[in-house]
Image 1 (tube, rainbow, N blue to C red):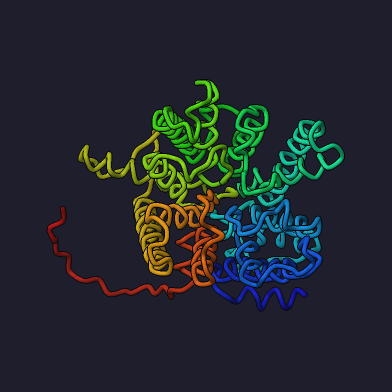
Image 2 (image 1 turned 180 degrees about the vertical axis):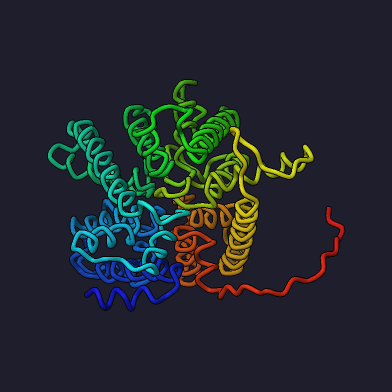
Length: 447
């Protein structure tokens, strides 16, 4: 087995990461095509199985099947396993297993792990992986118990399954639910306890494991790393701004939250702001939302979660660095300075590259989907669906099941790219070469 592992790691680190997800997706596809997976005993069609398996493995949440009504217990367990492995990353779990078996990783293999965990150094990789696993199961376990108790009056003995599934789905920012009829939380928008639990799970899963480690071990703001401080600040800002905008726009909309009390409207707006970043659970019909609300959600979905988290998107820290760069340009500063620290120029270049590549991918995928769609759906809904897949948000606007085979394949690739990261995907395709040749400098006009 170890010899095969060594051959596996001869690929580029970025290629290994993508290949691991592809293998998991294909395995999930096969399992969901089995008759035992569906209530009609026929199994899912290959394209639907591929779509749902990709959505679960990439913790997106877009679905073309009703998990409650269409899948058996076996099919639901398959989905749960895919969500859990996809949230943690198959590289993370596989590494822990073979490391416990006594396998000693070579330099190339350690570089692959570093790449998959988005770390700048190799020191403490296995300790970090152990902490990731521990934090995940402790948090999911605690909330699974809490949610089980909450669900007992409604579901009885089945509350255990509901508690476990929704705890894992929310923490992994997957957004799948078992309430049926594609309603998500629309019929539970007055269940503040449920929204609070799921919202906390989404936030914990979305801020990243290094941030959680800082909170547990360092505990004081002054001792937090620069990364943790930026993640905390930008996440609070995005949640607050998103809440206020959604509340203000939907205040008079009776088809969403307009008929609710002001506290209930604020609660639903806050949950939507938290969830639409990467989780995908919704408490009102998104198809009935105002255009401005959809635009706000598209921006939040595109930004996504934080690095080394269970979510996707271009990442909140990337967005922060871009904002900081623009502010530095306006102030005439060459260096990016924040919290008494300087951010390296190469990180600024990487942030703009990620933003640009992400934008190009979303626009291109949106154009292709629009051509496939032949103007059956509004362009805003097509773009919403595209960004939802790329940001692994999984916010469904009611058109996911209506795509044909080609449309679903475009979304499958978009979900995969969004989960592994646009930078990782591009680097897996491009061979990097260092050149010793340096050409003369010459300025051009921009702006």
